Amino acid sequence: MSPEFVSNEEIVQAARRNLVQAAWDYLAGASESETTIRRNRLAFDRLAFRPRVLTDVSSMDTTTTFLGHQMRIPVMLAPIGSLQAFTPEGGAAATKAAAEFGTTHVVSTGTEPGLEAIAACGDNPKVFQLYVRGDWTWIEDIIGRVKEAGYLALCLTVDTAYSSRRERVMMGLSPPPTRRYPRDPSAQASLTWDNMDRIKEMAGLPFMLKGVATAADAELAVEHGVDVIWISNHGGRQLDHGLGTMDVLPEIVEAVAGRAEVVLDGGIQRGSDVLKAVALGARAVAIGKLQGWGLAAAGQEGLVRVLEILEDELISAMGLLGVSSIDQLTPDHLRIAEVVTPPHEMSAWTNMPEGRIL
Image 1 (cartoon, one colour):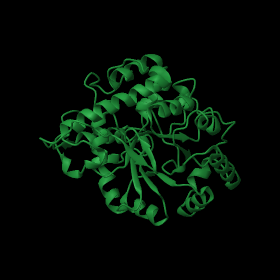
Image 2 (cartoon, rainbow, N blue to C red):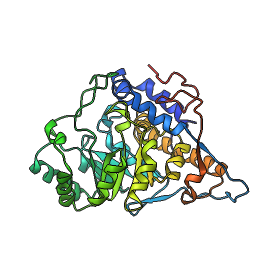
Image 3 (cartoon, rainbow, N blue to C red):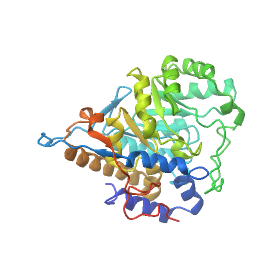
Image 4 (cartoon, rainbow, N blue to C red):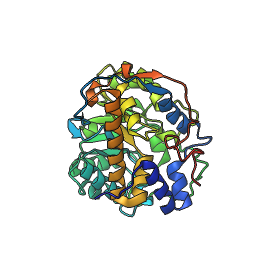
């Protein structure tokens, strides 16, 4: 049974008590002025609901499908390379939580205990997220291992051509061990559309492109046969002064025009955030910080409880909005409104008004 946390705010507070300062800053912080992370939150906060009444919401269907697999709610686990900093089991705990709850885990290149060990931890659908860390021989080897381990899709991250300056931590947390994945910074920086095509062909799996932030790149991705456009600014941890992911979701959905699925991360803190993203055309969202906080609070059980709370919030918001299934959500359920709370990485929770638990 999951721990009896009553809110994800309580889980965040428990995580803070359990984490050393460097690990906390690594998870909670962002790059330079942290403007992008705040805009991620601002983009959600600027959207207000337009509820409909006298509709039958006596039963709820929160499920969705992603790449042909059903998920209990339209929330999957984003790739995090240093999950081992938040729980000794690392990515194994995340996959076990995803399997227990009923959702998809996107496994990062840098996550311990390694892609094969993580794949063996549960029968839930898993996607492998690739950082290019070596030459074509290295790429071919790791893709072969991904296919052998049974991952359902390959996700290429493309917003990390250079390391960002995360000044809250300034690399105070050691990076994942290099014995498994040697680091070659030029490999990621030299990626092109042609390189992507070669990786996609080599994989022969459903292909996701993570880090898309403009309609122009979304259009190119579809032309190159990408199956899933993943809108992301790395949770505000790469380019500073970017737009919030929800700000660019409408233009990307329009550019894609149903030719690929769209997923989104960045700033998701509540079930109501999930509804807003789906209403504007996202197939699903992915959680990063919330995932890490859940693991830091109580390992696998803490993360399961994060997802249970999101589900409860989702059901409540759906019922009050007047919809009984995810596929009933449309842009008509939303309007732009004035923001009432200064945005920050925790501004959805009323007892954290300053945005930073030091």
